[in-house]
Amino acid sequence: MTAPLLRIRGLTVSYSSGPAVLDGLDLDVHPGECLALVGESGCGKTTLAGAILGLLPRHATVTGTIDFLGNDIGRVSAKSRRALLGQHLGYVAQDPYAACDPIRTVRHHIKEAWRAHGATAGPGVIEERMTALGIGAAATRLRDRPHQWSGGMLQRASISAATAFDPELVLADEPTSALDAELADGVLHAVRRASRSLLLISHDLRLVETTRTASPSCAAAALSRPALPARSPRPRATSTPASFSPRPTASGRHRGRPPRRAAQRQPLRS
Image (cartoon, rainbow, N blue to C red; front, side):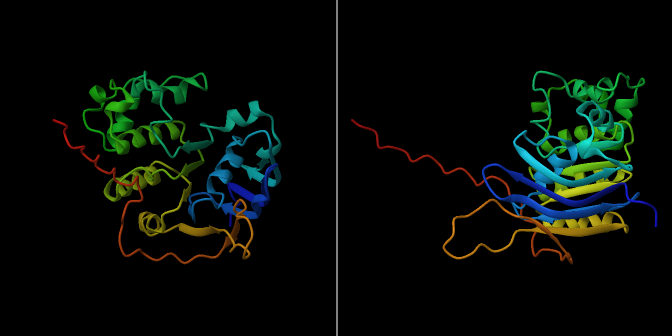
């Protein structure tokens, strides 16, 4: 078997205000593999993404190794890590609207993937990439501002930006959490098609079954937090890897925002 693209050993992340959020995590992602990492809210999924990308706050204490393409990126300079991001390691954020500048066009957002590395996209390249991801009339729609696009459309723009340089690995952190079930399936298949290797982080067990369907090489793992002792304050979650056998859920209900309650009308005074 070839060496893994991403090899994490003994990764522990803690903050000064509490116990470890991640504790001794081991993880491998091999070339051509799609690994779905699933866990409940608070178990450390986004902390793991931040550790890989070097985006954790300064007061975070990180131990262990994060080897990517044979280099421990946890110990390289910020400049060296930035050179890896985009060209070798793509990132699809959870909230596509937060990832975009609201006063810039969608085209500007995608072009930034090339501009950040001193490159430019060739004529028609962005339109072709967006058309391949299911955006019709791309040349016209790319002139829109982010708020004029739906969440599913804008997430496809983020996928296009994340895969501009055909990176060896794409890290997708909850890429479908803001979408309904039908759009989530489409975005998930889009990010899988556009990625050579994929690390998918999600709380949705249903996505694991979809991901396995999208690629026979998909694997699954879980982050779980242990039960808390009785009568103790609730600490920050401690995450440990565990074996996991995905099962399709009974329903594909979207875990979005709760519906707003209708305002109660006050009686008119005469």
